[in-house]
Amino acid sequence: MASRGSLRSAVRPPQIQLSPSPSKKCRFIYRQLIHCDQKQFKIKIELARRVVLAEKGKENDMGLKAIGIVGCGSIGRAMLAAVGSGKLALRVAGVTSRTEKSAREFLSTLKNPPPYLALSELISASDLIVEAAGGSVVASLATEVFAARKDLMIISVGALLDFPEVIEQSRRSGCRLYVPSGAIAGLDGIKSAAVGQIQHVTHTTRKPPAGLEGAPYLVERGISLVGLKEEKEVFSGSARDACRGFPANVNVTAAVSLAGIGPDQTRVRILAVPGLPRNCHDIDVEGEFGLLHVHIENAPSENPKTGKLTALSIIRALQDVVDPVRIGN
Picture 1: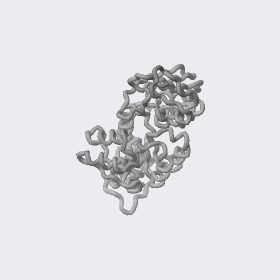
Picture 2: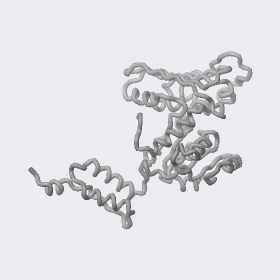
Picture 3: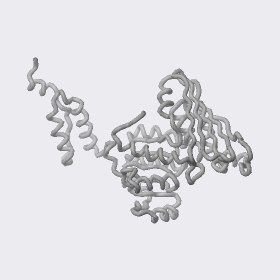
Picture 4: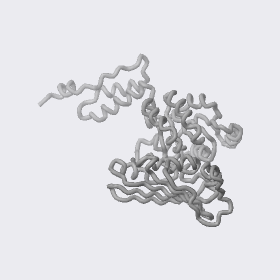
């Protein structure tokens, strides 16, 4: 049997070269690393990972310092309220918005408001940028954020269908791209099903007319929903076309298509329903795994196009970024 000393010499820690001026925490971890024995192999590997992250200056999941919020509409304000109430244990480095005046006015109502910053300043001051400003900003924002080696969370998921290069930019740069579930449930099941064969995915959305009025698809065709008396199907087609025609309404559709069989194969129906008090979504998936049906009814936020669950999903996604425990995939 090998002696304890020979065991120690046989299992040596990874060769890691510290920077000329390593932090106290980094030196402490390294000292623990070089004294690990074989029984502590898993601990040793994790410690080595932490040393590398520390030397690269990258924050690990538990070390996220601050978020920067782009957009100060209903979702941006919900995030600020969650931070102010203590539900979200993150520091807000700042806020920027296309409507600076209204954003500054809102920030002035907060007890401890974050600063209003120019976009370049916001990116520099943040570890994670959260987009809540609409799909038109996503492509340019992603380019700036990833160039600065920062992570990005996108609320306007539909933009990823028009700008798929954002996903590849994330992968090439090694910077994380977070895409929250938003106003839907079941994405984990769809992602799992997509590992095997899926025959079809159908997403049916029912919303009150006010939640759809003004969508580009309706405007281009001269369709008005004012005074609508009975349920009306206003769209039937692919997820890609739905996201282009209803960009403020169907981020759910984009998320479902990205999780499953893609935007061209995912089928979508959108119906306007007078008097409907909630935004309703039905997802139907059939594949080799069996059948999946998800039905959800979201209470609208102050913005009738956005369900309250959307903001709650963003807050939960941010909590997951810093929480070492992950439930679901």
